[in-house]
Amino acid sequence: SFFNLTDKPFELLPNPRFLYLSKGHKKALSYLEYGIQERAGFTLLTGEVGSGKTTLLRNIIKNLDSETTLSLVFNTRLAADQLLGMINEDFGLETAGKNKVTLLRELNDFLVEENSQNRRPIVIVDEAQNLSEESLEEIRLLSNLEFDNFKMMQIILVGQPELKQLLAQPGLRQLRQRINISCHLKALTREETEAYIYH
Image 1 (spheres, rainbow, N blue to C red):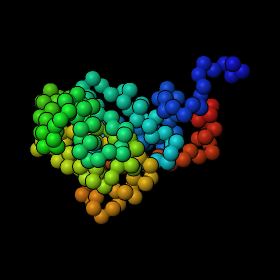
Image 2 (image 1 turned 90 degrees about the horizontal axis):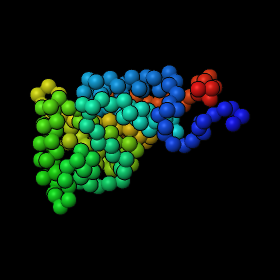
Image 3 (image 1 turned 120 degrees about the vertical axis):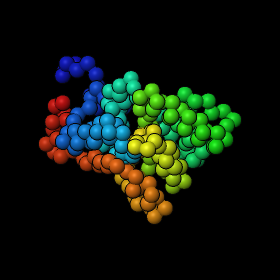
Image 4 (image 1 turned 90 degrees about the vertical axis):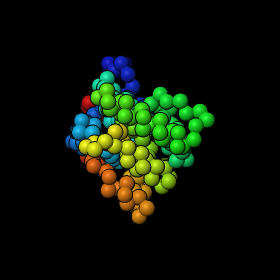
C-alpha cells in the first residue's frame, strides 16, 4: 500500500506482465521471434537460474498467433519414448498403448496436415538441461521430419548453462550443427538492476 502497488512485484512466478526487457532480454526476445518467424529448425536459449528464460518464453507464448500449434514440454526427466509421447499428447494426438513407430508415424501425419493448412507447429522444451543424451538425440531425429525447403516442426530448447555443456558432448555433434539460432541470457548489470526495480 505504501507504494500503491496492486501486485507483489518480485514473486518467483514467471509472469510475463512483469517482463523487464534489459538489453540482453531484448536481444533474446528478438532472436526467439526471428526464429519463429523464419521457421528455424532449432533455437537455443540458455541462462542462469532466475535470469528470465521462462518469463521470456511465457511472453512469446502469450503473443503466438492463431496459426501456431504449440507443444510445451516442461517435465524433462523422461525416457526418449516418453518424450515423444508427451509431444504427441500436447499436439492433441492419442498416445495410449501405442509404440514408438506408431507415435512417429502419427506425428509425421499430423505435421504434414498442419503444414498443408499453413499452420506452424512448435515444440518448446523448458529445463532442457535435464534431458538425457538419448532424449536429445530423439529430438534431433524428430527434426528430420521436413519438406524440401523447411522443417515441418520448430524446436526451441531452453535451459541452464549446463545445457551448452551437454550439447558439447561428441555424441550430440549432429544436433549441435542443427542449431540455427543461439542466445545466452547474462546477469543484469547494476544499472539494469536499478532500471528493473523501477520497472
